[in-house]
Amino acid sequence: MALVEVRGVTKAYYTSRRKDQARIVLDDISLKFEDNEFVCLIGPSGCGKTTLLNLLAGFERPTAGEVLYKGKKVTSPSPERGVVFQEYSLFPWMSVLDNVRFALGSKDLPEKEKDAIARKALTMVNLADSADQRPNLLSGGMKQRVAVARLLAMDPDLWLMDEPFSSLDEQTRKKLDSDILNIWRVKRRTIIFVTHSVDEALHLATRIILFSQSPGQVIREWSIPATMSRDPTTMEMITLRKEITDAMPACACADVRPIEIRM
Amino acid sequence: MLFNGDDDARIAKHLGSRKGQDPVITIGSDRPAALMRTALTFALGLFIVLLVWQLFAWAYNDVLDRAVLRFPAPLETFSMLWDFLFEGRTLLGYSIYDHIMASLGRWMVAFALATVVGLGMGAVLGYSTALFPIGIVPVSVFQMIPGLAWLPIALLLFGLGSNAAVFIIFAVSSVVITIGVAGGIRRVPPVVVRAARMMGADDLTLFRKVLLPYVTVDIINALRVGMGSAWRVLIAAEMVVGTGIGLGYAITMTKDLLNYVGSFACIVIICIIGLLLDKVLFAEIEKYARHRLGMEEGY
Ligand SMILES: Nc1ncnc2c1ncn2[C@@H]1O[C@H](COP(=O)(O)OP(=O)(O)OP(=O)(O)O)[C@@H](O)[C@H]1O
Ligand SMILES: [Mg+2]
Image 1 (cartoon, rainbow over the protein chains, first blue to last red):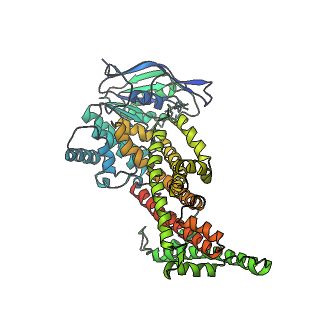
Image 2 (image 1 turned 90 degrees about the vertical axis):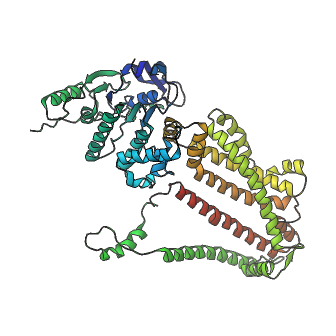
């Protein structure tokens, strides 16, 4: 049985407050996510990637179809399915440490142990020194790392990550990507990762799913063995990259950059 | 404010003292100067009030010369105030402190009740998307009733006297607080609630640990506005329901006895207490809360 199964899911929203029109955002999507996969979702802005994650997390219900998690219908959020949000989602009145500890709130653990777990999670994202600071004194990249530490402490089976690093500079993003990859290798969890960047997807994913323009549908999928070299200069990677960019819907808003050919 | 030229000017003066390539420049404390500026600004504002008052009194008394009754000037008023406060002069058989305490007592009872009711109703209305559209209707209706228009209801319920005044203050400020609190809760961004839910927070945890801190500043602001409304309507209520003691009652009675200077002295006291409550007490509470909640901008 797949860890997550999306069965014929359609999601539509009213287009205005008059409620006399609805627009379909996700159009009859069916997908399966297996244990220990690292899936990257790519697609143009507005094609419904965040909407799909919201359905997987249980923040919203499908208009039609169903989302199954471990065979059971998803009806509400649960700490089994952790989310790193596209936007800033820390609690500004709590210290960094308390933000991470909050993720352990529903677990039945002694306070001392919670503290230790939270500190360990912060160490893993290189933020042990900022434990007592307030989040609003941190840089953007540090804030997203706290959000990642939250999930590390929570240790969910499924990680839903919505463009977690897209607002960061290239170097920081690459560093955090490698960190996530390491965490995934160590923890053997399932990660569904939304990104605009083909390069990022090629670096991380064991499977890449390409969405069409709105209304979102799956255009194509690629599987990449975890063992395959991710060196972007290998012939295989260059070919794959071209294949994906060629398959991307031609759209002004899609983040398609020309291939850099490095010798 | 878009630009803070003063800050830049102040820092620019110290740019020369930069040590080598060190990006941090020592500037020294601005506190005494800043306090001085605040005090001066405040004094200037106060001076304008007194000046306009003095000019008006002078024009009324000496230029118009309709002098059936004198318009109290600042000096007479403050001299009477001095007598009330420090020379033990009584007003309507009570010391001024008795009047102040009577008013503050009513205000506190009514405001405490309004806080409890307003926080409760505001929390329920803000939290429940189903109840809000229904509940906001009566609240909005009540909001439209001007303070003193509660008078008939107050008299029917409590008759003449102190309780009627307390009721009016309660009615006005509880509505203000309800609206402020409900609005604050409704403005909490969904991502905050979702993050908490995703981390397994139940209803109680969500409310106590996330929603409440998030709306603390809104709640304080709601209380602050409610406090102001309560204080203003308190005086008005005391003027009409015959409380026998209190600053509002003192104003009507001195007016009826043609002791206009006495009325003015009471008005000055009312302004001072109101300003102290708002600008000192609540402003400090809000500043402290913002700091505790990590919601101040920058430092
Ligand atoms: N709650 C909502 N109500 C109405 N429309 C919505 C809602 N949520 C999303 N939409 C619409 O659904 C579409 C898809 O939004 P979504 O946020 O899923 O896009 P996305 O693929 O994540 O885009 P991006 O890459 O820019 O984040 C958009 O057109 C958006 O306006
Ligand atoms: Mg999105």
